[in-house]
Image (cartoon, rainbow, N blue to C red; front, side, top):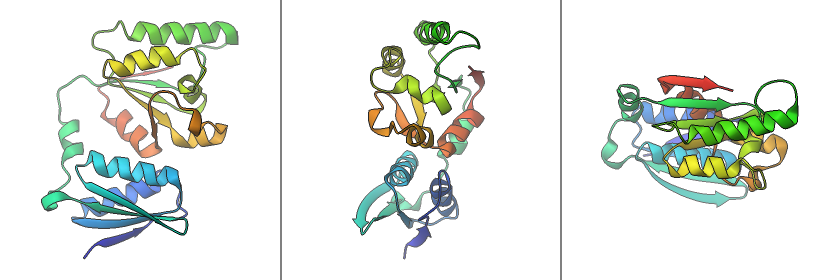
Length: 197
């Protein structure tokens, strides 16, 4: 019998946290109910990252997400990642400019910063974009090329979904993964080194 997680009407990152708690509680199969595409994507991505099977059905505006853990294996991925000796550098960008003062200069500097990051060996583990930082990853921005280059080198780029919704830009993301506050927080906590711009 599956465990039911009703996360309808709950804001990011609560649906993911409730799913995580159900898995941590030992449930081999969970049915998660959410009522918006962002929560659906976030829960599906989280469940997949934990090695779970995911099936989605939509019924009258509600998404039913069936999450099943193969063989009922416990969730140890987060612990394994935290125990790793690998260098995990995270770069956090909360603005689409670098520094205070002249905005045009700030845009030049942030583009140069991203291009220079690709010269670092190794490149960052992850880049987190939130608030106005999400604007760096949308269509038409001259920073997309630098971010795409970093992505091709193995850097994961997390773009805050709540921020994209706020600016009305979710459909315009050109690079990175639309993410949520749970992923952003766990990334920042798992970092061995963090740079905030």
